[in-house]
Image: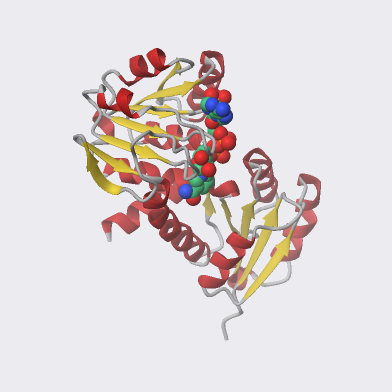
Length: 290
Ligand SMILES: NC(=O)c1ccc[n+]([C@@H]2O[C@H](COP(=O)([O-])OP(=O)(O)OC[C@H]3O[C@@H](n4cnc5c(N)ncnc54)[C@H](OP(=O)(O)O)[C@@H]3O)[C@@H](O)[C@H]2O)c1
């Protein structure tokens, strides 16, 4: 008889994310085990508890979800988890701290519905945050020339260096968007713009977008007014405004949720899945192709 499915949440926050717990339950896991305030040094013993209790043939029924609001902390936890694995002794694991991987995947998939990424010039406004960095990483993976924008060009260039370290073929350049004139300049020639700025901050005024003749798709991930892209609507899902196909944060959110659920289900397809940005994007691509 098959063992019950156990999803173990490793969360760096004092309370493990209720959002992630609900999604886990909605994916029909039999047991959800939650660990909060998890630190890197504690991971080894926890993973051993998951790895050594069931035989190798049953390990596909145990999986780990790494979450929490701190994406950098989540990355360290994921690394600590995979460092514990050897041979067949492993369980599947997924990183989606702060929803950054699923959100970035949904945004880039939305863009890919309207432009061929391999030919695209793409601007990521606030490409320095955890979500923006992943958006830039996935756009570069798709072959786009990616402009990573920030209020600080130095910060943007530092992100570009990190992206090139991860993917030597990434075509990424750092841009300053500290003033409206610089934002307009960064938009020149871009067919895709994705705004990944902090909640409640407008990064792209409506008139600047209207003046950008090459933009075909504009995606805003900020759901909190004022929105990141002026004149857009949080519910937009492929709504055409002045010749630009627009998506708002909730418009992208439906795809994000589908990707999150499909990724959780994929964890239980074997005991060797390690789902970070690229793998979660691939899950989204499978959904688009279905
Ligand atoms: N739909 C969803 O399910 C979902 C899930 C997760 C996140 N989100 C949304 O995605 C967006 C990005 O998330 P995140 O966690 O990456 O955001 P974040 O870390 O809070 O901020 C991202 C970037 O915004 C810029 N920024 C911050 N304050 C600013 C200000 N006052 N003026 C101009 N720029 C400012 C900063 O870039 P520079 O300092 O480099 O300029 C920062 O790196 C947020 O709006 C978040 O709410 C949506």
